[in-house]
Image 1 (cartoon, rainbow, N blue to C red):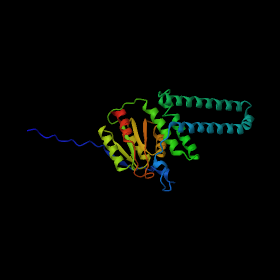
Image 2 (image 1 turned 135 degrees about the horizontal axis):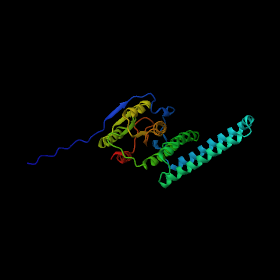
Image 3 (image 1 turned 90 degrees about the vertical axis):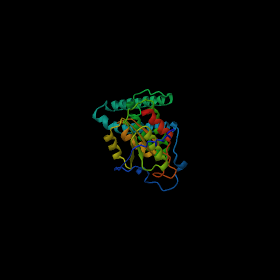
Length: 270
């Protein structure tokens, strides 16, 4: 007599909750409770980021030029050639910035990274992304510009072709995921044996990284928290940042693309 097959229950990832001091979602403290534009979906093409990044570079070096123009007479009193040297430094810095930005553009659109990660997505790019976010706020385009910047960062990071061993990847998620999204994340993490941390604030998320010592992180957050998190962490270890949709406003029942998450996890540990 045949023995009936016993269905093995699907593995689910270990879920660890951590409390931290910098509250995730604090970037939305000014939210007035009204529905977010486009149902909380801030998707934007990379051109949006590159356009605002160009403005950021122009504003930055323009402000430095104005400052040098004002200080030149006083500096010239100390040494006659001092203003010339200051302008030479300004010109060299501006030239290097233009060259680097051109290499960034080519790297993104040619789909081939022309610089090592410390000189590209895990280096100057993080500073440019942060400065561009401030400029975008002036125009009321912060979330769309940040979304585009994160997409550019992810595209550059994925091309590194990094491969990880068992236990070397960590998934960080916020507490505001919908039940369906949370279940989906746990199912994916369980299939690939990846631990999942729910971070309610920022600093202990970094502490969890220090204690677990992963070689890479897949993080889930809204555009605002993701920009801050990448600035804090991505310079120290590789990170992929998956942004969320906020159909019910920030910090509540957020949704994410589970197919993208599984693709990322599989590409690193699969």
